[in-house]
Image (cartoon, rainbow, N blue to C red):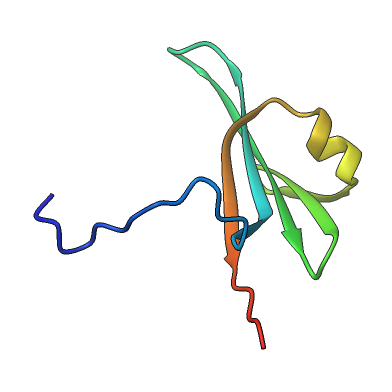
Length: 80
């Protein structure tokens, strides 16, 4: 990296807040398997995407899944 995009990270800075918005799950082996995804829309409404089938899901479904890949939105905190 040329240093142009480097950013100092302070591990004690608690000003960062992240919100989970998607979880990809994998079932099967390294050679074959099946992927499903949980996505969050409109605050706390979760959906499970399984190929062409999309169904409502609960936060418990998401938390009980074995997340293979997690996606987060970074939220900015402003102080006055």
